[in-house]
Image (tube, rainbow, N blue to C red; front, side, top):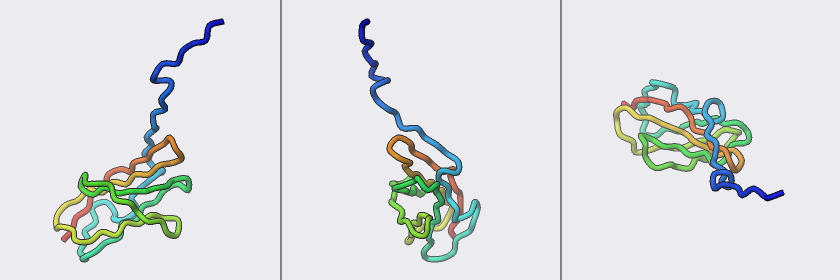
Length: 107
């Protein structure tokens, strides 16, 4: 019986993207008004998550720190106006998760 050759698509594993509760922005809350010279974002994930990062206004991805089972990013020197925050993480080797966009304002 002849051995079947695998196609390139079968050989390469494509990461699966998940959304929903795998990674979520907990703070700031949707539409929240921030008025301090600094703010710490709080990101919740499932326990298997690792390497959490955030992007603000579609900018570069910034690494978060883990503490107390949550992920945190300290934000300073930000401009007034409306902003959008997105978080992402990896779960194992083959799955990525991206949060829903969180919109908030800075006074």
